[in-house]
Length: 52
Image (cartoon, rainbow, N blue to C red; front, side):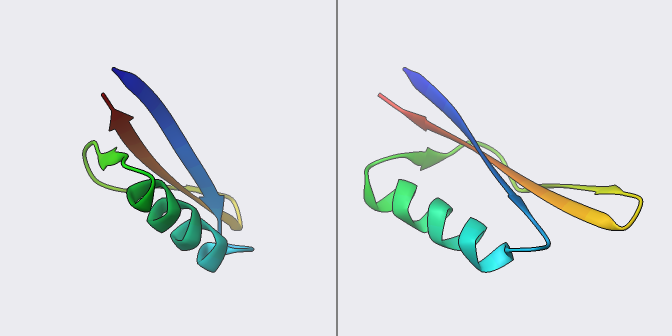
């Protein structure tokens, strides 16, 4: 099984959404929910995906 972590930031949340959507289209499956981390004035988004 392969594991990948997709990362995005508040400077480009649409890019993050596109990357997650592309991974799903490529056969990856979501592993858990989105993690959101705020550091000072920045927000980071993470989504784990897996593939057999």
